[in-house]
Picture 1 (cartoon, helix red, strand yellow):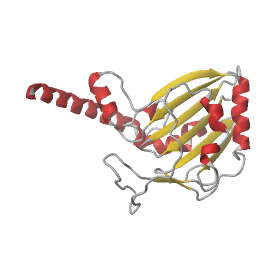
Picture 2 (cartoon, helix red, strand yellow):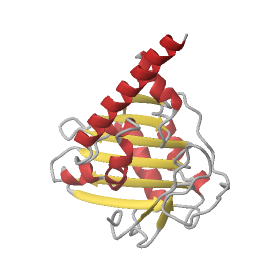
Picture 3 (cartoon, rainbow, N blue to C red):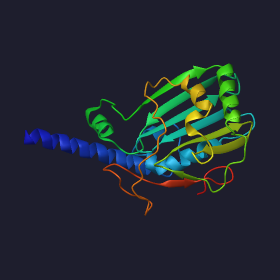
Picture 4 (cartoon, rainbow, N blue to C red):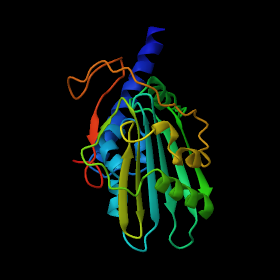
Length: 239
């Protein structure tokens, strides 16, 4: 039994080491949507992803329109991301939805060892019609997206908030909602996005989180808990 356990432990260590090597290779790159699903890479690229660095890089007239919305339902519990790509040539669009947890969980580690692909959430990709995309745009406008970003706004990882960013015809726009400037549970675009969400993962509803302390950048409220903040600037996050 000990030999079997030792072999399993060594396989886990090798998998973790391989993941770490890949992390170091990717850490210096701007985050792409597909990479953010990897919990090992995510801590190194989350800021870039949440700031839309990849969208900004390709934002130019005549290019594909891109939308990204992020729902932070306490980072260690659930994060939902919605990446929408509208093709400039056809007007058709796809919505990629991912549900994840910020920290690396046992399920993900076991998936690397067993090859089962077992993870911490789910993902789906569906085609959406121009009418559905228009409904998302109208819901964003109704939610106040066209207002200037709130400079100095603090996004706490252990709270509930939404971020949205859009690039259309070379124009990039960024906005965030917390319980200090909106009713996070009732923002209109949530229901519209749900129509293209086929992950099957239940939505974590906003509630008052239990905060144990914020005396440092990172604090521990449990074995896998992490705390950090991001600050909004004029049209994105302050680096």
